[in-house]
Amino acid sequence: MSNLKIAVAALVAPFLFQGCASQAQPDPSGHVTIASGELAGTREDGVVSFRNIPFAAPPVGELRWQPPAAPAAWEGVRDASAFGPACPQPSRPDRPQSPALANQSEDCLSLNVWAPENAENAPVMVWIHGGAHRLGSGALPYYDGTAFAEEGVVLVTINYRLGLLGYFAHPALTAEAEPGELLGNYGLMDQIAALEWVQENISAFGGDPGNVTVFGESAGGASTLYLLTVPAAHGLFQKAIVESGGGFQQPDTLAQQEDKGLAAAASAGLGADADAAALRALSADQVLDMAGPLQGLGFGSFIDGTLVTEPPAQAFASGREADVPLIIGANSNEASVMRTLGVNNRVVAAAAGGRLDELKAAYNADTIGEEEFLRQVLGDYSFVAPARWVAGETADGAPSYLYHFDYVMQRRRNRAPGASHGSEIPYIFKTLGEIPLIGRFVTDEDREMSDIMSACWVSFARSGAPDCGDGLDWPAYGANDTLMLFDTSPGAQTGYRSAQMEIITELLEARSGFAGQ
Figure 1 (cartoon, rainbow, N blue to C red):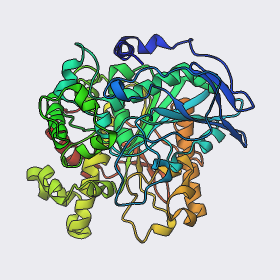
Figure 2: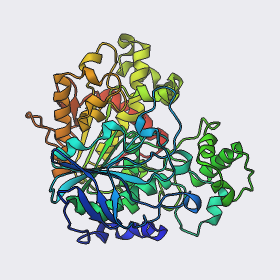
Figure 3: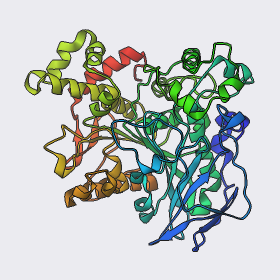
Figure 4: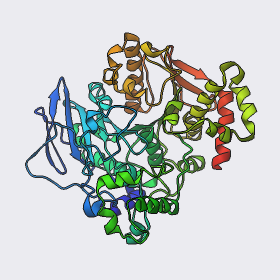
């Protein structure tokens, strides 16, 4: 995809793809033809799947730290039966590496499609994986799209550039860019390129390019917030779901990222006068190692001045987001990931400012204990209250639906204080059996919760309103402050933990300066 294509998308995206996508349907043999060529996928029990489809050119050599370019066409039939490599990323010392991450390469800008056999104008869902913008892949086993396809959805999972290969600024790269040319937020550009690919090609798989839901968790949820608020992505999707994506991000400026880029390059032995060619001459492993000494270096989107011009919260507060139906929420033990990332209890005290005693009273800290108080505040401050705030800011236009996930697997309830970060994913994808180590302990009650959540997400993708079945009514969020609580007795709750949320929201607004409308 050219630089011009992304820049112009800000103006023409709402109109660019209407009526221009191919209307071809999947061949029963498992073959489809898209703009780049013919693909041979696999068929099983009414589901056709296609893996490792390039949506952009390999970002290697001169294309490293460049906006994604169009993928090359191929002759003959491309084998799409196996996943492609994951984008380069560090290993995680806290858990065994997934086999899906064993093969890594900078040539990783691919996506995967699961579709109902003989689908026609089916709703489309595009999944953006999490991993702190530094880890992960669209090929992880609990992102398998079979269950979605069985429910009539065309499911797409994508890769995007990660870490310093995906989010990086350096004065040498800025100097070589033409005025107004996109730079820095390469991972976000990749996500936009994948959504453009969907608009051009998804009808070949039986999907409806006019009914696309983008959804993601953690870094994928945060990315979805940016996609909702950057004009270049508007018109590329019609609905959005944000799972544990925050909402009050405070992104760096280009100048701040350039300073961090200089420090990162210095750790690889490059001086401040290093040019772009010297940067691109580094191996992928050297670029990964550059992030090691920079423990304070955050990854993810920043304000580059062209693609991203403001924090998402500022856009939401000013009503400049894409006006599309939205599901947004978070989990009850989000502190699980914050502590993994090194965020400790001192952050709570700093965030509370002079209102710590007020917070303790709202959370009934004397009864629940100091440790439980700190755990709840840490998760609420980072994820739960921001989700509620975004739901409120977007409630005046297309409907927004707020949820809180507090369901813990039946076999783990005496060992977990709540639903940990990301634990909702296998319920939504119906991949509970893929959870490492504990998947074999899944119970009928756990499967019932999975059926409910999957129904909510699938029906939302179809119509823009979640129908969770079993008589569960999930009203749109608004002044009633009603959310869907997913726990052992799921149902709508009004004013759920509102006293705690109000204080946390006031603290977040004061810190960010983006008060609600």
